Amino acid sequence: MEVKIKQFLNKKELTFLKKYGTKKETPFLLINLDKIERNYDNLKKNIPYAKIFYAVKSNPEKEILQTLANKESNFDIATTFELDMILSLNISPKKISYGNTIKKEKDIAYAFSKGVRLFATDSLNDLKKISLHAPGAKVFFRILCDGNGADWPLSKKFGADPDIIFNLAIKAKSLGLIPYGLSFHVGSQQRKINQWNNAITQCKYLFDSLKNKNIKLKMINIGGGFPSDYIQPTKNLKTYSKEITKFLKNNFGNNFPEIIIEPGRSIVGDSGIIITEIVLISEKSKINNYKWLYLDIGKFGGLIETIDEAIKYPLFPEKQDKKKQEYIIAGPTCDSYDILYENYKYKLNKNLKEKDKIYILTTGAYTASYSSICFNGIPPLKVYCVKNFIVQPNNL
Ligand SMILES: *Cc1c(COP(=O)(O)O)cnc(C)c1O
Image (cartoon, rainbow, N blue to C red; front, side, top):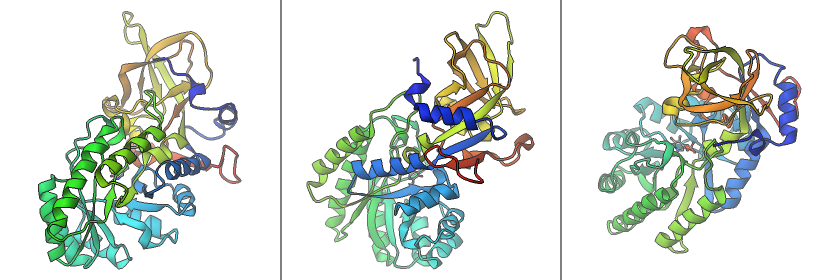
């Protein structure tokens, strides 16, 4: 599939990159805060009935959190560390949900002491811990999804089958908690929109069966999974929202429960560009028609989502050229696992040279927060935030 840089970046953005891509030591991640605002607005516009809880793990950069806070976003956190990051920005604990189903008792107690009153759960033991350390809190129950159709599935690890959830909701009430709603995550970068239908149908079943037990659930958290722009295109957000709204209507008529979304990738993914430099180009055998391209960033520098080549980032040399050649692309570290793309062969300029810059697009999500702290002595990925591709003082 031939993709062109012009499909992803406009002239202004390209000019900016050319000019400022050389200002800092590579590799670094450049975040356009303006794009994040637009992505947020776009989600709001397309799913107006949903409350947005930004999934902090996708990129916890302070300026990103502040930008979203200014937009009145809510935040989904997974640990007390993320909680502290949010609270340090003077964001109300009322805007926070503790979305991780795997929690220590002391972490629940800490969150509760800071004012968090909304917790996710999917097991009896976690529920008991919540009842002890966050008495009277609202809990929502996560349904298991198989993640089928997603580039980055979150399958199996989280959630439980509806019959288990049914019993948990009853138990929650008897433990003095408020069984408030249900949640699911269909898998990140989910391409099969119908996966929301499967999950929403299960939610409807649980809403009805629990009503018979005098438990009135009020909320559905339809998770993340909304797409960002990688090499293989997805349907646009409008199509996602139209379909999902239809699924909700089919099940709940015009009386939707409170709907929450927890976007990560679709908010920050395409706001980020990693600027990297070619360290080495080599050939290993005369019979191969491809070369090896080693960059100054790899799996350990933040590109972990290239595991099994799951996420295929749009990747372009700074200078474009018509003559192309296939490359295997790898990182700089002394670990053989540090190969980014081997099966999927990127076609890049035939005349690429060492020290040339490569842009790795759509790298705003799940990169900086994944980068290792000192493997081979390499420091964590540096992040610079700009607004609308206009340089801010002391920034870049
Ligand atoms: C990671 C995560 C998200 C974000 O998912 P995206 O696909 O990046 O939008 C949302 N909710 C929960 C519970 C998560 O763990």
